[in-house]
Length: 261
Image 1 (cartoon, rainbow, N blue to C red):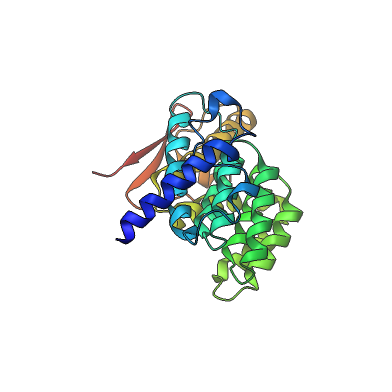
Image 2: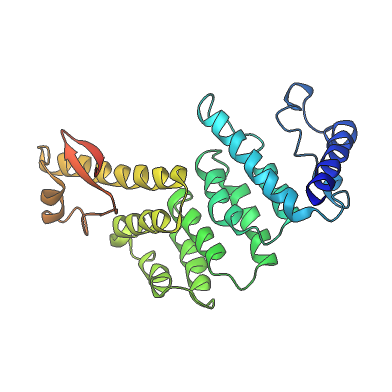
């Protein structure tokens, strides 16, 4: 009975959406964004099914992202989708911790990612993960270590924040720690994510740091580095990053991540 009621509610909402809620979207894109009307339209029209609809829209957002990730790699409505989900469910934490990284890295709209994180902190003031993610974006994408340090410090004051969170606040202030902090942030992203998409982002982020350091070695020394261990011994890496289930290696100035069988 509950399932039938939900189906009926969805049908009614979709009909209303088609009529009134999609006017802001260009006509040729309305089918793709059928479940994501304007924020004003969503408020007060969900009939008490906010949380269920938020879950449904999360799945639809995954489909939208996957489709464009495989084709044009353009995500003009990604922020809007996540904004709608958090209007329906302000406690939908994966939007703030993972969705904002998608907005910053894939949609290349870090300002909108930060805006969504501000919304998350207003609705979830006790969580350390949201200000930590804001620090991550400021440091990795915006390259603003002072601002990143501020948000890492705020995150460290929250209940249940891991001890390492506070260390990031200090590390980001030291230019010499730049490589170490970036590697640790990507390792942290890998640890907290169960999504293959975000684990892939973490692996690619680590690989880019290793590649940049190998190129810097070549520029400084005049010859190519042969291994990550040599890079580490020469002081270009603070440590050799390790990820469960796989390892990085350097071959002809190319970084390769090999998964264990």
